[in-house]
Amino acid sequence: MKVRKAVVVAAGLGTRMLPATRVIPKEILPVVDRPAIQIVVEEAVASGIEEIVIVVAPGRSLVLDHFAPVADLERHLEERGKHDLLAVVRSTGTMARITRAHQHQPLGLGHAVLQARAAIGDEPFAVMLPDDIFDSERPCLRQLLDVAEAREAPVVALMRVAPQDISKYGIVEAAPAGERLYRLTGMVEKPEPSKAPSDFAIVGRYVLTPDIFTLLAEGKPGAGGEIQLTDGLLALSRRRPMYGCEFIGTRYDLGDRFGLMTAQIGFGLKRPDLADRLRAYLRTVISA
Image (cartoon, rainbow, N blue to C red):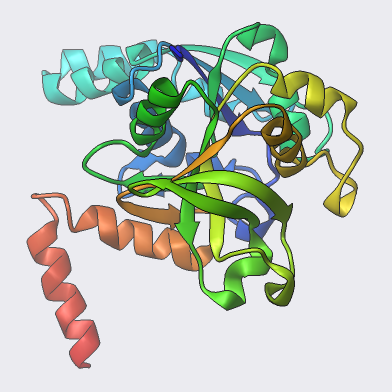
């Protein structure tokens, strides 16, 4: 199963990060000096994705503007001989072929994915949520694609979560199928911990087959009155085998204030130009 396209859902209102997201989409908030949406697109490209469909809400075009050419900035950098920065700016606009789709009403993640149906067509595709960014030696999406290609089946990223966090996620029922690999037999959206089938949560990365679109279009609103992607995944798993991959790496939740703060630290410590000073600062804070 060859996957060439990815859907990046960037149509949320970012209410968990207000007031920062009152005007600026949360996907533009920086992790050190790169917007979250850029980190996600870079992961897609590094995983072999050729075309990216970004789903946005009407009037929230800043996410797309980030990847457009900026002629005056490029001219300014070129005139001043800042060729390193010029290369960075230009590469941002050429790293991938990007198109857009619109979600006109906030009717859920499943509904947002459905808006990309025309752009994806009748082929398998990835779904990436920019709230979730991953620090891993092998890109998280590539880990899923390896499974999808080997098993010819849909795959989702899995992560174990603490009992107090279970009600924040879609939780799966699963049976072992290989190293860090599970065959999914059921799933439920945001269950109470006492009713959850496991502590495995679905996080931010999916590889799906195009029949998910029909299931989402025919599905009834689920939790919160929205078209839930989890409900579509459950219906898809009844049609064909579906797997969960317990990815190797660290996941940061940028939709959460603490997650955004820890992402700054985690990614900052990987930067040679920042790591020593950041470690020194953290030691002074901890010892204070």
